[in-house]
Amino acid sequence: RERQALRVTDGALVVVDCIEGVCVQTETVLRQGIAERIKPILWLNKLDRIFLELQCEGEEAYQNFRNSVELAARLRLPRHTGDR
Image (tube, rainbow, N blue to C red; front, side, top):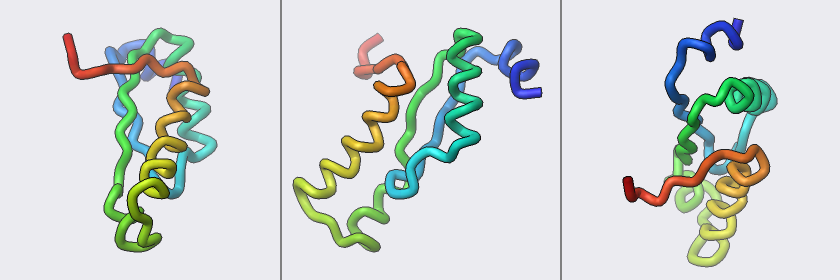
């Protein structure tokens, strides 16, 4: 069913909890979307949890964010710099 829905989709917003990471099903559907040439956008969600729950500061918070973003590289997501 996911493949059928992906064929009529222009893009996808991939929302990832910055602490929990990517769920297995999300990764599977994302790989299917990439195979269908869907243009995904990675969105890190719940950034406040890094500071409030884990009480990370500075470099530790940065490394946590970076680990979440590295998912994009592993899944071959295109990177967007904000320029058109």
